[in-house]
Amino acid sequence: MEKFLGTELIPKVIDLINADNCLPSVATTDSDGKPRILFMSVRATDSKTIRLAFNKSSKSLQNILIRPNVCLSIAGEGNVALTINGRTEKIRESKEYIIFELKIDSILSKRSAHIIITKGTVTKTINKEGAKQFYKMLTD
Image 1 (cartoon, one colour):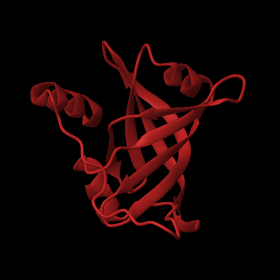
Image 2: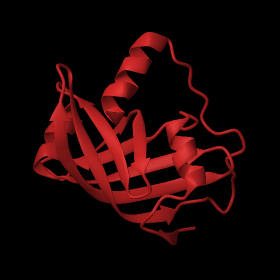
Image 3: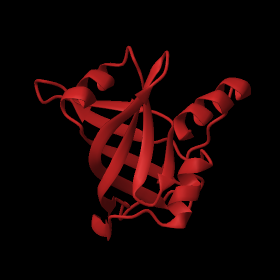
Image 4: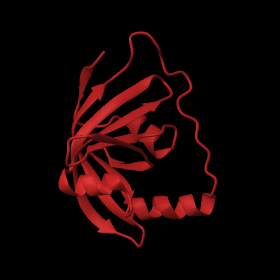
């Protein structure tokens, strides 16, 4: 069941995203119109903006540079199932990554009528120092 929720993230969703209690995926399209899904780490910087980092060798990066409109899916504990649509803008690059800001155009609830998300997506950081540096780069 789809329901329009607005254009701004509520604090519960910002906390979910920034605490890594979900595994976001971003959808881009290639030059032939074929979709490409990439699971990635993101950070909400405020209620209207989410930062994404693409590895410079990523095919999704090539897509986003040409077609900046993306769809970001968030699923997590508390039966959070959202699709966030928006337009990306390149803000900077590092040695390995290009950082984009996603300006939110719409947020849609995508909860199923038949299942609920009870425990969300559980992830484990395998390189804590590397992750710390990555998130610092993403939010600075």
